Image 1 (cartoon, helix red, strand yellow):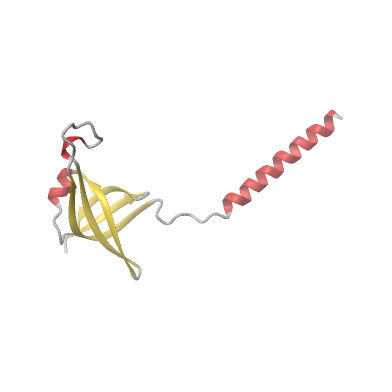
Image 2 (cartoon, helix red, strand yellow):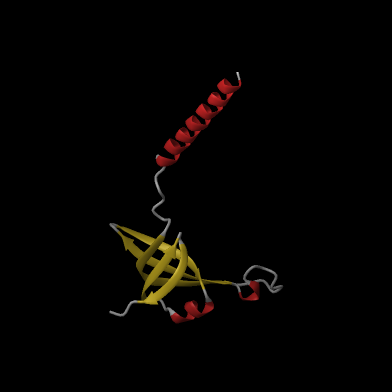
Length: 114
């Protein structure tokens, strides 16, 4: 009887592993994940004013955001990304830049010199 229960346990473990492998293999990967480089146009600057207490995540200075526009295939996409204060000041509306995104998180901004 002991050999039979061991066989059954191994059989169930192999069956579950095969089912899990089939289930994960059928999922489509999200195209937004991974590292992407986008050529964009700076279209707008936004600043969220911070609280006076300074107890928030961004402190009293608030958050800095730049809105970027890019063409992906036939579609026009708009991204609103949080940037540092230095990036907020450096890149002006109308500037052409190359963004590096990793899982839709801004990693780098470089100017494009035409």
